[in-house]
Length: 192
Image (cartoon, rainbow, N blue to C red; front, side, top):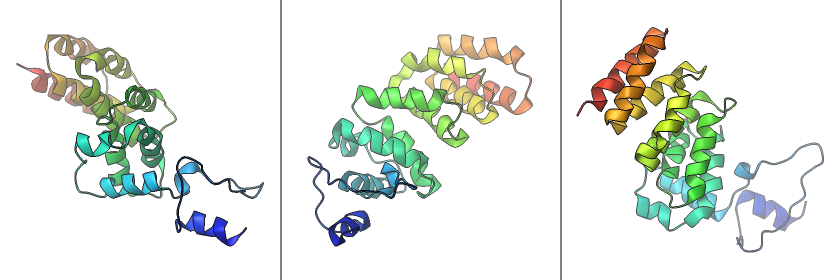
């Protein structure tokens, strides 16, 4: 590999987003896009390193290009867990239809880590409000206990009569005590 290629992988030197520099990876091993440093990823990581999720205005300046970066960071196990979860939450603050679609895909994919799916439930409810009820309601029957808990709480935070009906409908069907408790908490949160 050339020195320029090594410098690129090390994050040294200019990197143009308009014309990415092609690099060759060995045939036996591929480098994931999240592992390759880039200016947008570096800036996103900077915002995610703050103790709270950066405000909407901070994410708005990146535009829709930050959506795949945040999605990759959410699943990059080399990134600290707190930053990974803030990456999921940040998707709720990006002004782009792709952000909502990405959150929904994260939520619905049973192969994704439980913590990512659970955080996606909360973020989707923040992003879509009452439009998320139908999508979240379907996840109340998911096999993942942590996800069912997170969905019950996300629904409860939305509040409203429709949410109460959804939670009340699910409560007698739920057999797991910790999820039943989350449904009860959701009902308490949903009270006017």
